[in-house]
Image 1 (cartoon, helix red, strand yellow):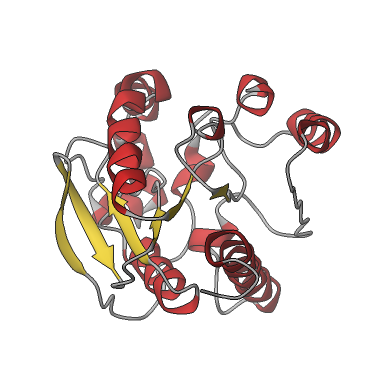
Image 2 (cartoon, rainbow, N blue to C red):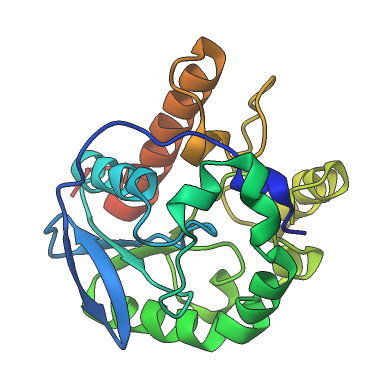
Amino acid sequence: MVTECCLSGFRWPGTPTGREGKIVKNDTYITGNHEKVAILVVADLFGYTFTNTRLLSDFYAASTPATVYVPDFFGGEVFDPAIVRNPGRWNEIDLEAWSKRNAKGVRWEELKAVAKELKGTYERSLFRLGAAGEGLCDCISTAHPTWFTKAEIDDVAFTPELKTYANEVIPTKGMPYDYQYFPGVEHSFATRGNLEDERERRAAERTKRAQVGWMREWLRGADGQ
């Protein structure tokens, strides 16, 4: 469920270093220039133009290293920053209507087309949970997913029930799996945490390191090539 907690958070300082281009038919933020390894970042509801998402993608590109793509999967729709920065105006955003326009069932074919394009261009690629069964990725990483379902594990806010289910079921699938717990932080801490708060800053930094370690292990191999 998408709720007002999905609008909360902080904008991070910094200037993205990538460029804008296209993949398939989607406007896309692209950063890095690795010829063999690609990462597809599916942005949260703040979209592909959000500074934090672009800064994270720059970090992934430099640290993995890889070429990182952040496509626009919301049809050019971007929330007005003036409204997002003012909780008193959040009622002006119809999150239920936005969710229906951009539900997985609506956007999946678009997402899959981009993933296939990357898979056909690069030797190794990282995508999103739920794509493994279609051979679209070599590894996956997600932080507190909202629209995650049990069906995707078998092939949301990440509720306690889903956490328990994931930790019980994914290890039975015969694939490497790593779950890390970040206590004392709220939904969106990994992309919009308050960097002035030590607990949130350390959780966000730990998340980035964990994701890059996972990417390097499964996208670059033991020899790092």
